Image (cartoon, rainbow, N blue to C red; front, side, top):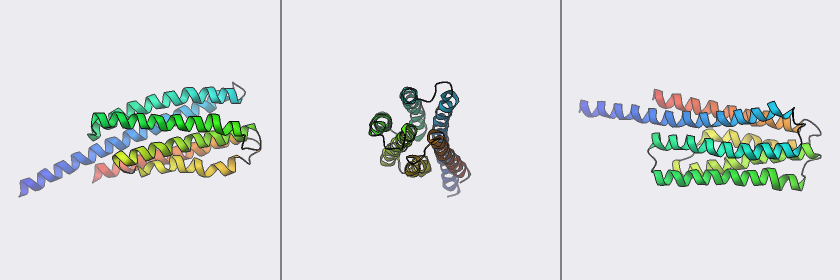
Length: 201
């Protein structure tokens, strides 16, 4: 009986470390997103901040993020024991969510010009791109692996900021960047907290 109890304890510790590894890989994914977004604001001042630059940058950035997310997802599949075929299908669905978000945020919304000026419209498109893409990613992960509630601030914070962004006369893109950074930073902290809780259990 004692041996069975010890084996159970060992298995629980192993399970906790596997869960923690998955949470840490997810946190790394959002750290990558944060780096890509911060780079946008670093180089923005050298390109006059026009819509052509924003659309070009985020088209390339979306491809980079999809590639990065796919690599992180492969590692999560490895540590979590998800079947390979299922993991590939999930990865494609996540990529699809980002493509839909990019089309909505960088093509459809700017063409509708919902803000009071061009910058406000770009900010609304940017916030919509992030919130729709991550909401889609969250829905995909929820169906295959259970709810990743740590992700919620990453898409909910930008979504709540959209009504404020379209009324801004100036500085809308910069402000929207801070909003997205807040959501991502909160998500990273929640993932790391969950990882430590899984290790300690």
